Image 1: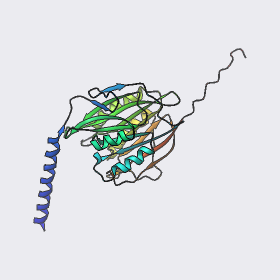
Image 2 (image 1 turned 90 degrees about the vertical axis):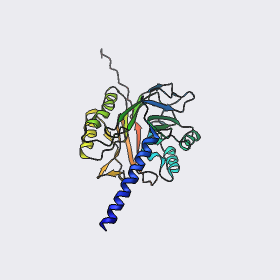
Image 3 (image 1 turned 60 degrees about the vertical axis):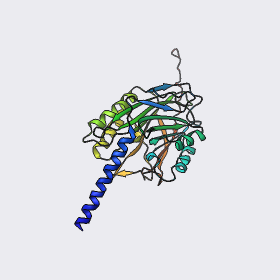
Length: 293
């Protein structure tokens, strides 16, 4: 029995090494942070872009936001699940999106605006976090942080969208680094997030796969959002994907009214989507008083 177990372990190690070699050979890590879009004139080599949006992101004050780790479209039925999420979301924040021909055709068939923060190329295809919406962003920038040991980067999009009350929504879509000892590198990636939130006075959505698989990582995130005045949209029936008993995917917000949140069961990925239903906060005018009265 012991010999069989040793053989199985050896076969497993050989298979893992073979996969690692294949992934390494098939992957190319760009030297520059690169934003990929499907605009008429895509900016393929810039870190940031700005443009005049055609419309507002919300629907008469209603704003539905979903985050989902797409698992590089490895799961069966991902197109059907993604279509359902697109139909029910004003803004869809994806992690581990691989811009294959199938995904690109899917996006174009639905006439969606796409922003992709390229983390690296796999077999010539960009992989990273992606924003999908029917209205384009006012501006967006890519930031990456390399995993300390395996060196593959995780990417992040910091974008701004126009809302119907004339404010701009700051949207941070993040895939947090995973393979670290301690939290110093994890905190370093969040430094960009903290700075963006500090500089923004309007509403905020901070969401994604934050890889909060330990108490220490969870506390780093909790401390950041507490300091920045953000709250979490927690599903009433919480079926978010867990590792070591900890939720990995989160939606945090500020300056919006949360109606409800939900997590959606699926077999199309190793993560379940998380969705938050928001309303814009009513801005009441300041009543002027007559100083002579």
